[in-house]
Image: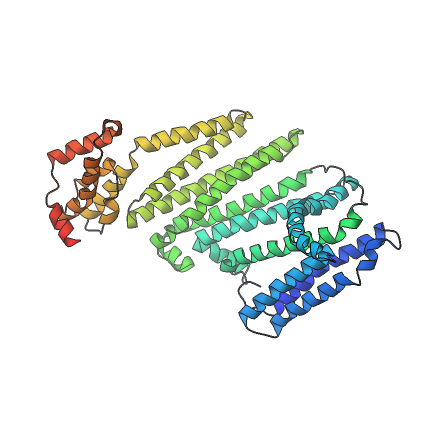
Length: 464
């Protein structure tokens, strides 16, 4: 539905949702309820009437083109479907139907998974249900990381476009959200409708997690990362002509894209590794070896992805200079690389109890190192180099830097630019005179400004 005006697709989707609710209900009532039991008799009356009216409202989107009219009809159809599912017969039931649907939506995922767990436990050695669960997890991981990689890299997006020629990357998020909303609504409605029959159901047994259930998603994720890394290596060694021919961009334009998506992908991978270590059973030696192999490959591939992200950020900084956000993002990429290296070490030596504490300690060490590197002075140094080579600098942004940047800002070649950048910093220094605000950087900046005055700050103010 996303990407197109309201029309026939809404009616098709509504029929699909209704089928997902009513067909299982019919089967459940026939198999589990004795003849003459209550829920059979209300099916042809109000729920059927409310559902039919809801379908008619949705069908209006195929007859009328006004968007606001379609929105009103869809809201009314959703309300009627909710009332039909909750079997409301009075005003109290009508008022209770809306929160009942919300509660059912929260409970729906566990309820939908219940029959699958029960069937898997009953089926014994069957791999159908574990494989289905593994395929579902793999599909989710591929969708999330695939969207990140497609939006981060034009060449990879071109490769995916050739594999899936009808895929519109811009509509994927909207379609995923729409599909999830429809699924949740259908599951919640089914839970409300089937509640009388479910009360007579026997409790399900806990499931046994099988190897295929976690090998499939982890292997699929490794293949996706390997494909992305292969594209990165091909583009890096192929040169500017290859990049221009494949992605339609110059090498610098291509490399400057997608840093943030790659950083998010690396952070999500860290979460996937943590969940895998937490949830996947490792009683058998084969499971332990296989899990270490899959996670080790994933961590190694993620390190290559991080290297690509850092290279992209370096080229971005060469073109546009440094900012606080870019410096922080670069430090975050390096910290993530350290955490992945620690994870590889823990997997190699089969001792991971120290890893969570080491990861937490690495945050503190990374922040200390980041502070000692004096990021704002690095920002000012980059601006000085750009000014010396005749490139434009953002004077307004430089004037918002702290006293850490004063020694470098004093080396700006243009006197007016230097005065404009330092005037605001100097005014803040004059305000921070209390002993409680003493700071080594401010002290050194004050001494530096005393030794080298601003020059002509009035010229900067007059220009403004």
